[in-house]
Amino acid sequence: MYNPKTFLRCICTAAMSVALITLFAGCLGNPHRINGKKTGQPIMDGWTRQQAGEFWLAATLTDNWSDVINAKRGWMTAEELASLSNVNVKVTLPVHPENPMPKMGVTYRQKSTGGYITFRDSVIVGDTLHTIGVADYQLCEPLYFSFNEKGATSMVQNRGKGIFTLYHMNRVRNREDGTARYEPQWDAAVISVFPGADSLLICRGNTIYEAYTAE
Image 1: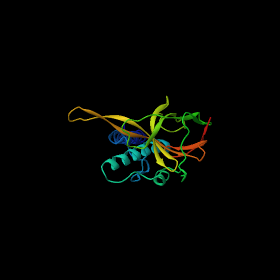
Image 2: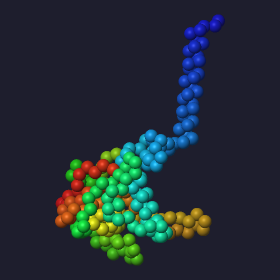
Image 3: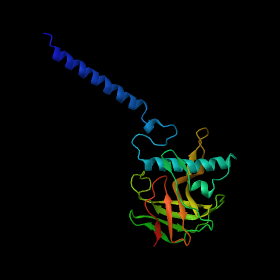
C-alpha cells in the first residue's frame, strides 16, 4: 500500500546517497584541491599554513638555483630572501649590512620547542654556492611537516647580510638512460644571524616563534 511518508523518506535517502557518492568521487578524482580556490595559493586540502609555507619555501629556493644555472636570473639577494611572500605564506626576517656569521661549533637552541642548529666547518669540494660549512639541526615548531624529526645535516650557503640558507645534495635519476646525478635541493629554512652571532632567527615559510640562542 502506498504510504506518502515512506515514499518521501525513500526519496530523501536516495538523494543523500547520490550526494555522498558524488562528493566521494570528486575527492578521488581531485585529491589535491587548493583550499580557498585562490590561484597560486600554495596550500592543499588538509595542510596547515605552516606546511604550505614549508613546501613553497623549499621549492622557491631550489627554483632560484635552477634559474641561475640556466642563466634566467641571478641569485636572490639577501633582501629578497628576507621578504619572500606568496598569498598566505611569507618570510619576514631582518638583514644586517655587516653580514654577521654564525659561530662554528656552537649550538643555537630555541628554548620553547627544543629545536636546535649547530654549525660546523667543512671543506666542500668543487663548491660554487658560497658554502661556509655544514649544519646539524632539528627544527621542532608544531604544525609543519615532520621531515626532520630525527634531525638533519645540510650545507650552509652564505647569501650575504647575515642571511643563510640550507641545502643538501639530492640524487636525481635520468629516466631515459638510467644514469644518476646529484643536484642541490634547498631545505625550507632561511636563517638570519644577529650581529655578535649570539642569536639567530629561522623562518620556514611562516610564523617565527622565537630566536635561537647560543648555548
